[in-house]
Length: 72
Image (cartoon, rainbow, N blue to C red):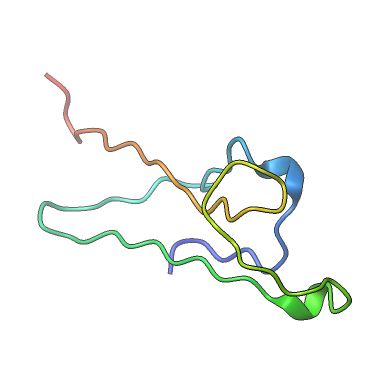
């Protein structure tokens, strides 16, 4: 696991980066899994969630950059 954020801050939605970069090698797999804990807001009524950009929508999305060890 590279990153675990137990309680997400809405203010982080534009960028959140690792404190230290990691080294990956050719052939390694990078996976992302997002989950949420409804117990943090127990009075919120259940509803069908879709991927979209609204505050009440699922916004699990990530980007990453890969840089060569020795750029030419």
